[in-house]
Image (cartoon, rainbow, N blue to C red):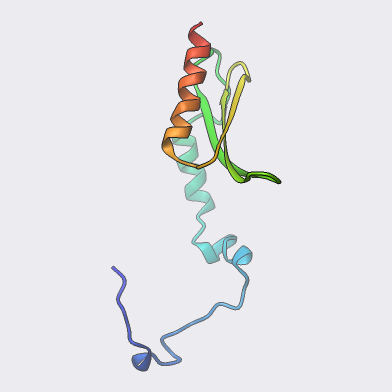
Length: 113
C-alpha cells in the first residue's frame, strides 16, 4: 500500500531520482530483471514452439491503435491461428472488450463454415 507523505515532511535523503531515462530503467537489473529465473519458468511453461500441428488449437490476439486523417484514432484488433497462419483483422472507433470479442466471434464463425 502506498503511503502519502506531505511535501513538508520529505527530505532529500528520502527522495531518490534515477538519472537514467525510462528506456534504460526498463533494461537489466534496474527493472529487477531475472533472466535465469525467467528462462527456467519459460522451460516449465512450454517447449519454446509457438506453432501447432492442428488448426484452431492456439490463437494469438493483439490490440493496437492506428490513426487516420479523417477519423483520428481507431482501435485495431488482430487474431492469428498459430497452425495455419490465417489472420483476422478488424478496426473499431473505441478499444473495448466488445470490439475485441466481436472479432473473435467473426473468426470462430469463419472457421465453422
